[in-house]
Structures are given as structure tokens and as C-alpha cells.
Image (cartoon, rainbow, N blue to C red):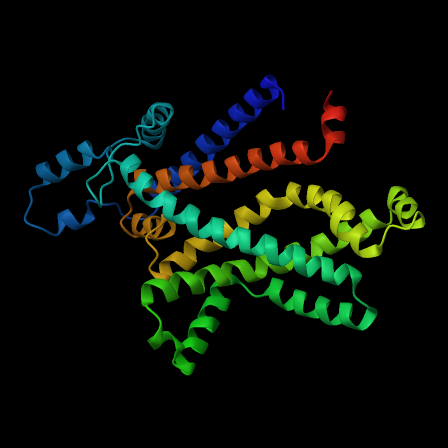
Length: 306
């Protein structure tokens, strides 16, 4: 990837982060009520409540509040969280690595399982392939949060949950709930990409020269299939990231999902915008990484760009 293209991608990512976080800020602000409503039920005077609203920028209009947010975003000055009385950047620095760890583990598991499932599917017979397609359809259709409740219900009924440390069992269940639908989708895409790759002229020529089908599928066809699969990995990562926000709330995982939930409940507009900015930054980073990996795996993309 050339320097100019990298700069353009970087600027596009910054614009995406600014836009998404600003929209979240506006939506959080226009929602009924605000953080100082609880102060009005106390014995504080109206003057004290208004001073607190001014300190928290809640007396500003939507354009003014958006300008306050956007002016600090390039400096990573996301103001202060109302709920936690701490800088938003500090909270994000603590919680983001936990979400990245959960999402990253689920993504890695889904990629490995999906590639294995897709390769078996591409080489399977008609009956086996039909059964695998049915299983894939069910796995893709079930939301991660529903699958999580199902896993927890099975663990409780079998008594498994009582024999495993909660700090291990809950994140593990959350990771599996995130990985299963994603791996099913990846498996279907990989099977299709692998079948198309093995049908190309170069693959047919290699087979006619005596190259075994197994080696052709795992070594040669896999490279092209993975190249195509990598291009959709940011979408898969974004889906897992979106689902993880709910999964974190249920499992008690102290990541961005739980932080976003607390921010929405408290009408903490700067924290809501900060969490949205962090999620948008992760999606943009995944997209950029995917672009780089595709160019490394497939020399044709570099030649076309040149």
C-alpha cells in the first residue's frame, strides 16, 4: 500500500469516527431527560443545578455541544464522564483492551473453525454437503445473545456452571456465542471461494499434471480462498463487535459493551460518544488491516494498483 493511499484511508477513518461519535452524541442528548434530573429531586437549589449543568456542558445547544466534542476529539480530549467523574479517554483505555481480547479471541476461533468447516464442505459429497448447509443455516440465523442464553441454560441444567469458576465460564460462553454464528458464515463463504478457486484453469492444469486433490485444496486453492475471505473479515469483525456489546452486559465482562450500557442508562453523552468513537476506531483498524493483508497475500492486487 502506497503512502498516499494509506493517508487517504487514514483520513477516511478519522472522518468515519468523527461522524459516528457525533451522531451518538446527538442521539444521547436529545433523549428524554439528562444526567442532572436526579439533582432536581434533591435539596439543591435551582442555581446549583444550573451551575452543574453548565459544568457538564448540558446547557449548550446541540451545535455547540457537537463543536465542543469535535474540537477535543483530534487531541483525544473527550471531556469527563458524568457517571464516573473521570476522563472518558482513561475509561476507554481501561475497557477497550478487554473488548479487543474478547472479540479477537472469538474472531480467531471463528476464522479457524470456518476455514476448516468450509474446506470439508467443499470436498464433501452431496448428502454430507446438504447436512452441513442445513447446520450452517441454523447457526447463522441464531443471534449470539440467544445462543449465549442457550449455552448458559445447558450449563446450569447439567451442573457444569457450578463446577467451573465464573470468571472463566462466563467469558468462555460469551466467546463461543460470538464465534459460532460467525464461523458458520465464514465456512459458507470459504467453501464457495474454495470451490471457485479449484474450478479455475490453473487449478485444472495442476490436477492434470498429477497434483493430488488434497494438496491442491489445502495448499494452492487455500491461498486464493483466504485472500477472498480476508476481504470480508472486517465485516465479520464488525458483526462480532456489535454482538459483543450485548454479550458483555449479560456475562458481566467489563469492556466497552458494559461501559456503553452504563453510559446510555446515565445519559452520559460524552461517554456514549467516546464508546462509539472507540468502536468505530476498531472497525476502521480492522478494515485497514484487511486491506494490507489482502495485498500481501495476492500479488495481483499490487499489480492492479500499480
